[in-house]
Each structure stands twice: as structure tokens, then as C-alpha cells.
Length: 265
Ligand SMILES: [Zn+2]
Image 1: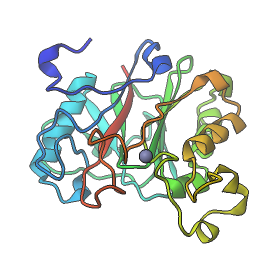
Image 2: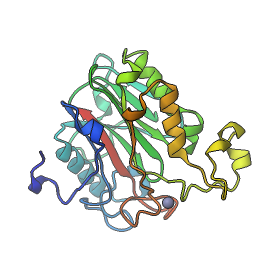
Image 3: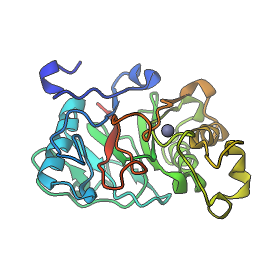
Image 4: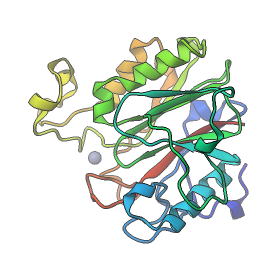
């Protein structure tokens, strides 16, 4: 348990199935508990937003402290579908964020990461896109994926499961997955969907409006890879219409990024 005095007012959400795994920590942070000023108030972990780097640094340190982990991996996310395979033997220590750092470290360019390393928080930064956390509690393998609509079209979630089952020898039926708050079917409007979204995915469009349900697509992408239905949880929280709980790019272009983190103890 995290003592109250270390939480700084942070009150992240958790997925029930991941919370039940020993040696695993995870958290979906919201905007509360950081030090950034508006419009990045307060727990912004993204350096590329225009926020004061000193504040971002403190915010990153706070989430690490909350998780009880000593280092973190932040990715240079580019809405692609590359997955970083992070093994102890190939891990470049320069990629890791540690408390006390005052500038962004070198960053691997990828939109997903899989590892079996312990003591390391895998952090995805979002403001409407999905972060999809995964864990195999038997093999002690974890993953975190940044899946915006472009990532959804490229099925980065399925590619991440392939890395877990291939390189890391996980069984699909053992993998637990959690889908973070993101732009929901209430707000994910695609006026130009005929150009932007392939026709085989139009089944995810609402009948009444040009709004898409990317949560349902993600669930289907996980099911297609053999995950059990009851191992897939989604928070069903829309970033744009959840008040000011989460950063939302659709709501305000100049905004922060909230952190979704998972780590092995
Ligand atoms: Zn909404």
C-alpha cells in the first residue's frame, strides 16, 4: 500500500484483474497530484507539450515514487506500430528515466513495449489515445501499448500480443489486458471516415453518427489473438467528456499527457 503522505493527492484507477496479480503494479493516473500550471495542470508527464520541463520532471518523479519503482521507460510515441522488445541483456540503461534527472533522456521510438525486466515502469502517455496494458502473471511478462486511431488501424495491439507469445513465450489465454480511458464512441467523430478508415472497420461506426467505437475494436483485436473474454477489461471512460479528470487533445489542443504505467516488482 502507498502511504497517504506519498500520494500527493494522486488517485489513479486500476484494473481489478491486474490489481490481483502478485509482483505487479499498475496505475492509470489522471490530472491530479502534479505540479504543472494550466493548461497542463497538474500531472502532465509529456515533455513535448510546451510545459515547463522542471514541472514535468517532478511529475514523472511523483508517479515513480507512487508506484514504488526506481526507474521508468518513456517512449517517443509516433502513432506507428513498432514494438520495443526489452530484454535485460539488450536494455540500454540510457533509455531509462530515474528520479533526479532534470532533462528528458534518450528515448526509444516505438508505440509499444514488452519486457520481463523487474523494477521498471513502462509508461504510455496519452490524451485521448488508448493505453493498453497487458500482463502474463505466470511468465512475468508485461507490455504497454499506445493505440490511437492510427495504431488501431495498424492493429498495434495484436502485434504486441504476437511479441508476447513469440519472443516471450506467453500463452494467449494467460494474458490479461486493460484498456485505459480514451476518446469514447460518444466523442470519436470521424467526418472523413470514408477516406481515413478502411471499409472493413465501418462495423465499428455508430449507425446514427460518424462516431467510432475504438474500444470495441481493441477488444476484438485482443480476442482475435486468443485472449479470454474475461481477461479483457476496459474502463469505459471517455477523456473528452469526463469533466476535467483527464487531458483530452480533442477538448483542448494545448494540453498535457496523462500516464498509464505498469511494472514488475
Ligand atoms: Zn465522450
